[in-house]
Every structure is written in structure tokens, then in C-alpha cells.
Amino acid sequence: MDVLDRRRAAVTGRDADAFADLFAPDGVIELPFAGADVPDRIEGREAIRAFARAAMSAMRVDKFETLAVHRTEDPEVVIAEVLTKGAGRTDAFEGRSVQLFRIRDGGIVLLRDYTGPLRKPS
Image 1: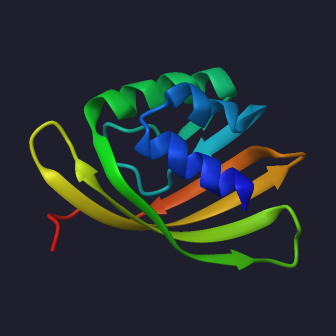
Image 2: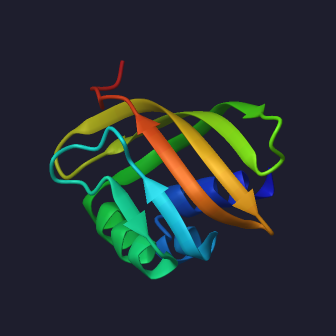
């Protein structure tokens, strides 16, 4: 899916603007399992842009691999299983997540990211 491919390029390229521009103007990111210092909901493209800039300045993502994509009965909804590897300010990490996307008219209106704990790479 084109949107998922462009998202991977934006994340690994540390391009917060390209990442935010994938979202509809009123797009939303939900992070149900976010840590205490991470918001669990970011609303609007410009808030997503600011969040992405901060996140991308704090960490580098070297690998962002979509392991599987699952289509649903709703043509707007896609579920992706993702493996991420990179480094924060001090330590390398890897993590897996399940991400639910609602994509309408070529823009992400909802990304719900169920991210598991980050671990040291195996």
C-alpha cells in the first residue's frame, strides 16, 4: 500500500514533514500503550508534525519493516504488523507493534499504534 510505503520512507528518513503530510488535516494518532511521558492521543496534522519532529530528534529508526498487512471488511481499515529497530539518545532498541490505520481519500484519518515494550536488539 502506497501510504504505508511512504510512511516507512518518512520514518527511516527522519522526515517529520513527509510523515505528517500523510495524515488528513484532522487526522489522529492514538497510542493506547504509551508511556507516562508520551501522549496517548495526538489530534490534527500540525500536532502530529510537532510530535513527529520531537520523536525523530530523540531517536533514529534504522529498520522499519512491515511484517504483515491485513485487510479488513471495511475498505478504509488496514492492520499492519511492524518491526522497528533503531537507537535512542543512548541505547539501541527494537520493538514490535500492531498498527490499525483508517485511510480515506489517500490520507490517514486514524493511526492506532499498539506498541509493545522496546528491548535491546537480539
